[in-house]
Image 1 (cartoon, rainbow, N blue to C red):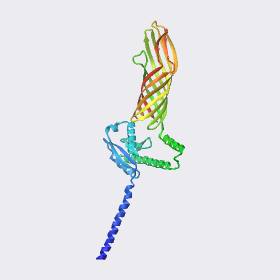
Image 2: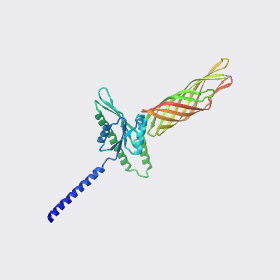
Image 3: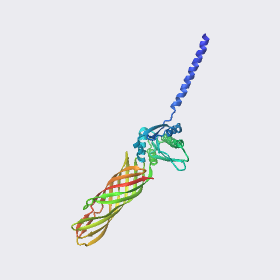
Length: 363
């Protein structure tokens, strides 16, 4: 009886050791889950559970995938607004990548095409992929989109590891040149060139008129910017059509054509850009004056001006925005028009201007 107890006691002890070993072996496996987080923004009206399942399968080795349902208002917002929302989520919630996709469009040949949006946490840019699946069905599209997301996540994870390794290398704490070089390279990667096109209307104050002097403004140029700051230079033209001012001593009709060079500096504030612009104008003014007796004469004047202003730029869709602002034009030469020695028009040394324009900033 004693030997039987000893033998079984030994077996029980071995079994306990075996269970303990299994528990200890399983614990590291649960602890080795990916630390990177990917968030899928799903349409509450048209949810896509298949895409969520495909993302979790494809990203199982690199990231944890969660989903968040968006309201109809959020889904209907402009692309720029949705990208800005995703940037905010990524920064505040420490999410590596925020993704969403438009509903696939079926072509005549049976293939599908969908647009995938992926906004990174630290890259300072939005990655846009257009995926075409010949003859694909719903699951094929979901799997293809998930594979594309896996590529982006793998790239981001690799770049983060490389950046961490570089920061731990031989940059001495007291070496300001090395730190400045590293900061310059980081800022350069976050900046991207863009085209800057504008077309709009403007109005300036003018004595002798009830509604001021109205005109149009056209400009084109290029700039460099990132998610929070941008700067651009544009060449443009202010066009003020003929305007008539009538006095007791006669009347003057004049028009103005002003080529301009503007520098614009912008800072993004939540849902809009706040911008400061400054530049030079070279105005060419043609005027015709006439007396009450019908005697008339024409003249032409040219002078330079300096322009300083501020504007708010509100993004709308696909790079287009609405710009509204106020400027102050300082004429280097004060222009007056006289008829028979009497002053009829004084353009003034300072002229306030208000403008509204449709603007495009994009590649």
